Amino acid sequence: MAEPRVAVAPVVTSKLSVKAPEFYPSGYNQNFNQNFADSSFEERYDGYLTLAEYVQDFLNHLTEQPGCFETEIEQFAETLNGWVTADEALQELVELIYQQATSVPNFSYMGARLCNYLSHHLTISPQSGNFRQLLLQRCRTEYENRDEATRGDETTRKQFHAFVLFLAELYLNLEIKGTKGQVMRAEILQEGLRELLNALFSNPVDSNLICAVKLLKLTGSVLEDAWKEKGKNDMEEMIQRIENVVLDANCSRDVKHTLLKLVELRSSNWGRVHGTSPHREATPENDPNYFMNEPTFYTSDGVPFTAADPDYQEKYQELLEREDFFPDYEENGTDLLAPGDPYFDYIDDEMDPEIEEAFEKFCLESEHKRKQ
Image 1: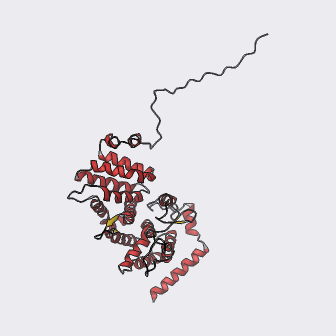
Image 2 (image 1 turned 180 degrees about the vertical axis):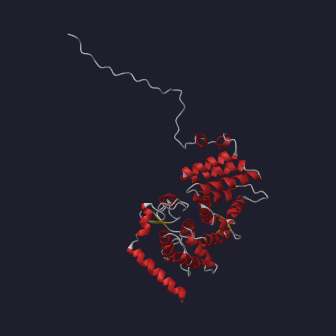
Image 3 (image 1 turned 180 degrees about the horizontal axis):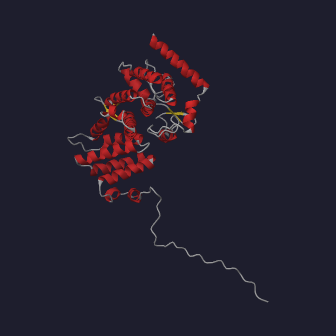
C-alpha cells in the first residue's frame, strides 16, 4: 500500500535585500531629525551647509511639533547668535521666518512667538536695524500694498490675508519694553491693523470680509481696550462699517450672517465675563478677567479658553484646524464654494426661521436709523 503524500508548502523567497536602504515615510526629513537628535551644540548645526538650511529645518520642525518650542527655542537662538554675524544673514533670517508664517497654514501664531523670542535674544544689531526693526520693515512692504492687494486676484488676496493674520498674531505676541521698563505692545501694529481693516471693508468681497472677521475675532477685545484708553471710538466705527456692509454689500448671505455674529460677539464684550473695575487695581484674586487681555476662544465642546490656560496652545491649534465658523473655506478664507454645490445651494435657498427673522429685524432697524 502506497504511503499517503504529504503536501509541502512552497518555499517563498523574499525579494527584499538586507542591503536595501532604510524606508522613510513621505515628508520625513532625515537630515533634520539626525541633526536635532544630537545633544551637542556643535553637532547640531555642523551638518548644514547654509544658514537657510538650518533655519528652514527648524521652522518645519516647529510646524510639525509645536510643543517643542519651549524646550528647543533657547538652543536655536544660541546657535543663531553663533551664525548670524552679518547684516545679510539677519535679513535672510527675517525673510525665512516671514515666508513660513505667511505661507504655511496655522504657523502664524508660532511664527509670532518665535519672532518675539528672537527679538529679545539675538545679539546682532547692525546699522540697518535689529531683528525686530527688520521684521517690521518687511511687514511694512506688504502693508503699503494693502489697497491693491484687496482688489487683486484670488492668489494675491490669499497671500495678503495670510499676512494680515500674521500681523495680528505679532500684535498679540510681540513684547516691547517701554521707557520705564514696562512690557507693552507695538503701537505701530495697532494703527496698522486699523488701516488693514479699513482696506478689507473698502473692498467687501467675501474673502476680504472673512479675513476681517478672523482678524477681529483674534484681536477685537485687545484693540478696543487699547483704543478706549486713548479715548477713541474706532471700534464703534468698525461695527458701523460692518452694519453698512450687511445692508449694502453684494457679499453672500452666509458671510452676512457671520458678520452679524461678530457684531453680537462684540456686544457681549467679546465673550468676557465683565469689564475690569476702574476703582481698584486688577489682580488674579479680584478680577476673573485678569488674564483675559487676549480674546476668549471656544473648543469644539463650547468650553471657553484664554491664553491663561495651560493647554492654550493645543486648544488654539485645534480651533484653527476645525474651521467651525467658516465651513468649506480654507484657513486664509479664500476658498468659497461655487454655485451648484449642494451646501452652497442650501445656504442660498434656505435659512433658519429664527435667523431670518433676526436678519430682517436688523435690516429694518438699521434702515430706520439711517433715514432719521
